[in-house]
Image (cartoon, rainbow, N blue to C red; front, side, top):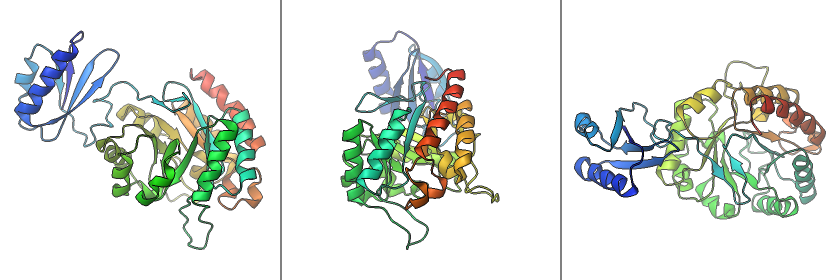
Length: 337
């Protein structure tokens, strides 16, 4: 249930009404202060809440029942878009298009710094790089681990780009203390114990959609993190598994407007994992921006043919530069900076 309050109510009036609801009905309350209104989201068993009695209160403008099981991630509870601000002042979800780029896996200091400088020069605002890699085969390269994170930090010092990297388990979180955005991969989207621990973190989390997960399941995973206290979530569509074999996965473009309608959280697209083909990254990126995505996360490697992970889907720095030019044309047409 959500309760929309009338405009021009004081903080003390809102606090008093919130306390009244908590004591009378035993519900938890999420307060969202927007540009034009204050919305109270009632969390828990609201079956005993007397709608007519609540609606009769002078402070109340409107009362609505909410059917969706996710509350904190729900736009009905939080009408305004969530804007995430990183330590360097970069804002995500503020109406601009944020580009994240870098290698699938950190392989050496020279490699990650070279790629970081290249992607920054053409507009990337965040550097991606895997230190711990979830691989289908136990014999494939698993990443450099803590050493890879250390190299990402060196690249950040050299270029000023914030960094994002994927965590595999809660036991690794201490190593991620200086990572600007923590990524949850598709295989861990429903690792609920990990999600709960991420809810205790003070940094943004990029949550990727699972290979065969529904949109509601993605939002419920976001709810796990938010319910534990961290509301800085970036949703990421990275392609889902279908019967199609021409691409690595099938990019669900429709997920962008659906997620933007259902939730207030920023929505990103990963065209690299979605397609598995470098020549498809540009058109998929353009389509994603046109559909309303807040950002893109793209794999870029300085020598894809010798990459230790996902080289076949990575762009070269030159390809990335060309792709960014066309992405920006669409972004400008959509009114994004």
